[in-house]
Image (cartoon, rainbow, N blue to C red; front, top):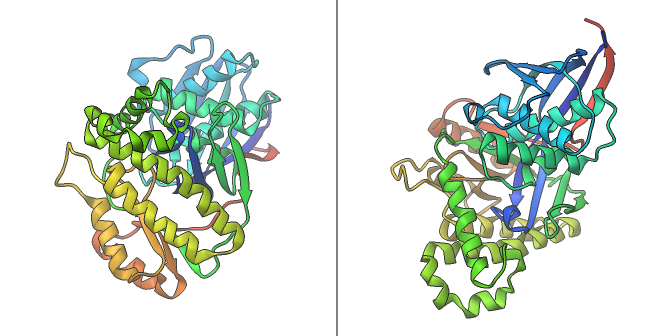
Length: 378
């Protein structure tokens, strides 16, 4: 029997480009120093067996990789979906046994699911000696999430986890997005994601509505995605576009501004202009809350943990640093860049409201999905 081998994939944060990737826009993202890892080995069968603490074990027969309604929303769907992408792309894969551990909190907006998908892709790549790129592995993860897990996400989460580091990703050509690595440690600032306690369960409709409304606006101009629309034409036709609902127009307005803002954030980081960068983070937060409208769900209007987190953050920061809704939104997390001298006060205030362990202070991870070592003994 083959020896065990270890693999790892990091979580990620989204810094700029909130809900732009699915419209072929730009995203500023970073892998972080929380990871999902596993020990795995080929088992000589056609069955992939995965165990992970807190989840039901999954056993996937690679001879039957059709999506299953009963698996939607679960770990088995992600394993089956990633394996299906590899098989459908012509790669020769086999069964393996895999024990997964993770330091990425589930539901905290740090893309634990994307990291798991990237991890699975790296296991298949490593165990079966496959010539597959980092972006291919990310694409396999997105495929699994879209068509097997049931979440209509873009490619940003998986790309950030797979590639690693701080990066600007341009999805103008989504099949081959352009990735520009950026070197910046944001000296003098702590990066924190706070879990405000909201559940992402039953939010698929909220996420899907953003995509549908943005695509409806693009369709008015005969396009499939907002990135294909001339922003000047959009602004000139705003009155006619109201037929799709004012929220759809506002969400498109957010896209055009946010798409440019992500690129400018990257430029400021490259130049070392931290204050210019933070100003744009604050603008992104205001646009997400006011135009994109993804800080709480209309299905539960009394639950507004993200808005409360932003209110507390702004009070503690007092105009310094920056904060904004993190990731998909509607429930979940707040991202903040905190001057070092305010770090303890910020943690104290946010913990008092959202509970012990809610604050996750993070560093950038400069590796993505990798094989750590080979030939481990039992």
